[in-house]
Image 1 (cartoon, one colour):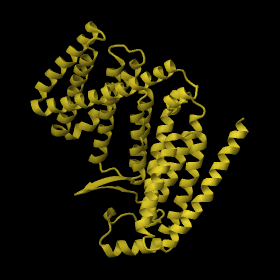
Image 2 (cartoon, helix red, strand yellow):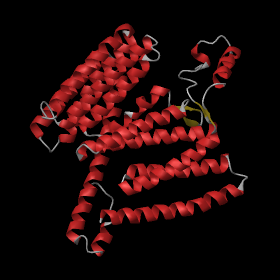
Image 3 (cartoon, helix red, strand yellow):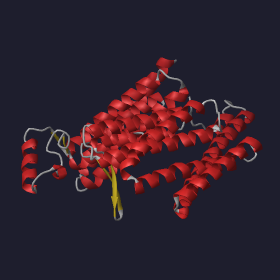
Image 4 (tube, helix red, strand yellow):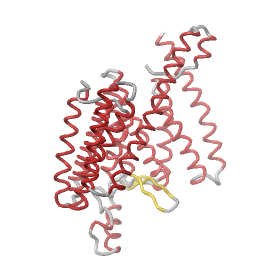
Length: 396
């Protein structure tokens, strides 16, 4: 189990010796430094690759430079070993990125009809080859193989998305493709053991019900047109992740925990939308949809929407606020008992957001609501404390 501990307090309590504490601190520092180095390295590689492609702005020059960079990187890795590994990795990845990225840009710019049909299988082939050789470290370092695998995945998914846009593919086909995106990203994150990649799988999964983000001048917004259905979708994913993680080794279970936390974040963000606006369940899925779905004018759209709402399940913002508060309290207590730190911290964060939002949105001029809420929190805290004592006694 991975846990956060105060090594100074543990030494003072006699749980650890000073030497053991120093070893734990050194390993923790090593992990943080490694994360910082890899983050800087990835940023530099992406920036340099993009810059080379647009600076050279010629397919032949990009291809030649990419081949030279890749060859130079592989030679460095082969002859210089660990001493110059960072430079070898960087040169190899910049070269590979120029070849693949340059090819994608050229195809989309000059050969639009063929772009998707070339990128989709080519990216899949690169990904499968790298995945096949990744575990053995053949051909190059695992870092390089893993990064090129990600490039291949990006090329593959971009090819599919290009075809989707070219053919104006709509639901339900698009929903199935988005699910495929999510599964593919999660599998690659698990294979490479990079939880950041696994966490990113939640984006296409949420977009299956049009949940996502947008931005405009001075604002970056989260939107969820089907907040209730999105919450149910995310709860199902959370349940599957927690159930499955108990049957897997720690290395694999960590990826499921991260995915569960990301799903919990999306569910809470959707609940925030519902607590402010309420929800007409299914209005954009099996209901009238959007005005842009082919309505002749706003009047016909409004008539269809009103007719649907007459028989639809409507959850008011007040009901949403109460249910969300109860759910957050339950998750905080459960996560604290089960040492689910990610869910615990996320639930606390959204509890603060919920309280702040409702303070100004619903109860700004109703002081009695604060009295009731505050007094209700006291026995709730006492109940959680007593529950913890009972569970500790049961576990002996």
